[in-house]
Amino acid sequence: MFSLPNCPKCNSEYTYEDGALLICPECAYEWTLDGEANKVEDENRILDANGNELIDGDSVIVIKDLKVKGSSSSIKGGTKIKNIRLIDNPSDGHNIDCKIDGFGAMKLKSEFVKKA
Image 1 (tube, one colour):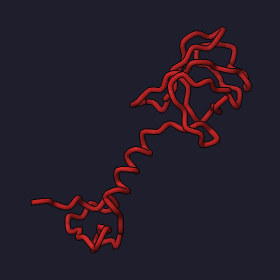
Image 2 (cartoon, rainbow, N blue to C red):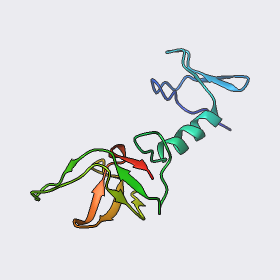
Image 3 (cartoon, one colour):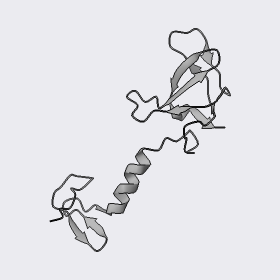
Image 4 (cartoon, rainbow, N blue to C red):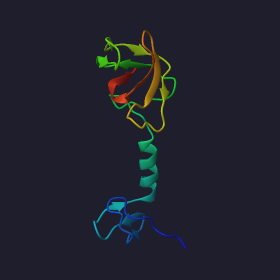
């Protein structure tokens, strides 16, 4: 027997089908099973400051000066970084792994870069 998923908004177990929609009677939230698959796929995408999707091997440009912990200098806005690697499960919000000339290996947040 196929069991319906709990409501993604309030986690109620009393969901029911109405055509292609799934409906929660407790909070009146409506969604589709296809929408859930797209939502999970969207969460795994990493976007730059302008909303462009980043992939491994892209080149990016830093959009503002970034202070570097433990260093007296900073990464200047406009610095181009080549061949980035994306981190799937960032624990601290830094989802880009790269090598910056003059600084070495470093992790960055995608919100401070734009696709080159």
